[in-house]
Length: 363
Image (cartoon, rainbow, N blue to C red; front, side):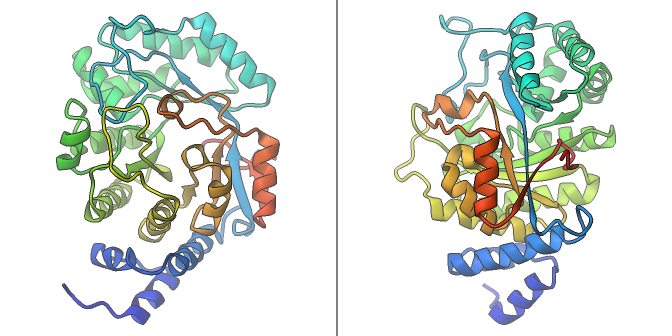
């Protein structure tokens, strides 16, 4: 292993220079407080010119709602407690009327976005998705549809026997506004084969992002860690995300969270703790020098840790999230309203501001 000068690496980070994967591996072993300090410095560098020069003082959040339009899925990921088969009594596909009710409730509290994802339903036709997007766009033009993860798009392309670019283009024309980074997990195929052998591989996940960005759709990037992967795998995941951003420039934010093992087939001997979550987020902020926004994950870690994460590189508190079904299926059920989020941000020493999907301030 190449010896890395500690002072030189610190200076490189504080100067905003790009670090290598070897640097990242070295950083992972540094004291957590030191890593947090460096991540916070990189946060300040990333946000220094945003929001009329006040980006360092501002922490943003969004008012949105998760809508899982179906829980039917045929990829059976070992880490998921949400999916059902068509043989299960509690499987469902939401009606347009049920979705309207959720959107009416979101609109009533000033919501501006839905995060819409489902399982890989083998029988829903292409027209169902297009009609749904048209319906939402026409009835709720103020709501951005942040929907359908890369595995879903690859599923659509295969199921409907259409080129991936055509599927994404048709969805965009029908009203899709942006794409979430779900299904990324760890972008190392050896890991993916162990936890979700029927899901798309790393290149296919990145292909969706490349095509979407070329078509003008922005997206987020994610990492779900703390299961069967190694530290090196986490860094490889970050490397692939950074290289994709170099190519296409369409990632608005990065979000990482820990695997929630309750009620899932995939088991771990020791669930990932708070310190490891903060370490991973801090490293991501330092390594991903080309992604401006990092979101804390209070949904999996809890509100207090979500607040602490603001001192470990995060500049965004995520979503009010009126509804969440996937993580909660595994036993994690934290909830916050807008006032609670603003209080947590304020008490951490920042100014809370609402945003939209593109990180434009709304108030």
